[in-house]
Length: 502
Image 1 (cartoon, one colour):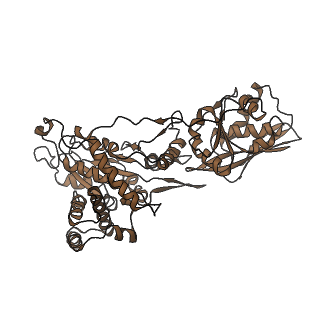
Image 2: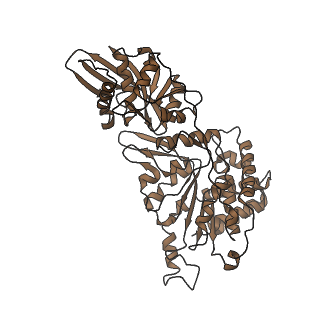
Image 3: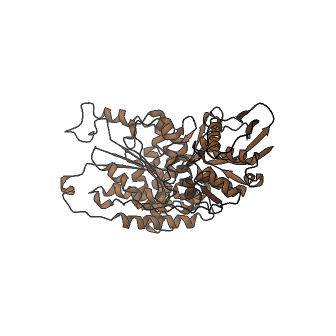
């Protein structure tokens, strides 16, 4: 007899449906799994056999073959256990075959039949909803999967509960979504003394999702400023929260099924490998740039990162996604992040201080910042110098706008952008504008155009640089609620563009 159940195989954030076919035929007793399984999937037969023995279910003395279709799609992970057990239960008439065929199952089996939570419950629920099937998963994964409200999700604690559910002895109640995680405590911008220009640059960057580079001596407050950036960004929209959570689900980062509305803030160390930053490894897992999707990627000590790693950031910055190419598959992950980089002006860090600079100044500064290639530097919309803070500023009480006040202005600017892009679903913030639309919403007047021409002639603005200046000017105008960009908006955008230029 042949029976079927369904599960999923992950390709990036996409969960592709896999048909699990189980055939019980006469022949020498055997239990084999075919269909391009990896080691974890092949070992499922031993976990299934032990779980059945715990439930006093005897396997027939026949040849049992499990086929995972499509056979040319690589199958990786232990989450295939439950679907294999479900198809086998249907093949030996323990549960109705029709019920098993209407289910997408996802879960790892312990030897005693307990269901162990697995990664990827949220993308699997999306596929179950599209295929109009019920998702069966471990109880601990049910709260995560239930965030897909269009899917019917049931979570079982063990295989015995699954059998009772499908035989009608005791139905399992549908899973309920987990709690929305409480936002972390917000760090106040008022804690940063001085650095008003850097604070202004952060506000502009947050309002339009512009990439920013901060250069300054050690201890000037670069990391402190970056740590306060999440507090001025608006919370994730429901759609963005679902996208971000799907990536986190693949990495097992969702705790107790809760979804977080706070934007991601990722800060990898400068010794991180290319696979850690971009993604990759044996199973082509998402990297830091994908985990920062819809949030912030903060790279401190920017020139200290491996040159090859930095160069791989260029394409994701432009396209908002990264393609991880492997011999047997190409996996695509979203990576629409805001790049925030911090760097010292030179190796010793005190290039601008004649009393403390090393003997190689200013050549050491040119060599150090030269580690950042021109094409990558050109992708920073805002470049700001963060000078050392005087003791007189440190001794003053906290002043300036609070995080709450700046966040309100950023939210108002982003609301204007949402209205502007309501007919363009692929656009979200000003940094995404290009082509004819950029000419429409950020058309410079004659004075602004003359200023841009003179700046281009003197400083050699590239075509990319010219367009990025217009986008930043559009964001500055949005912060003021102005319908058109003005000469002062272009002048301020140029002042941030030309700072720290080489």
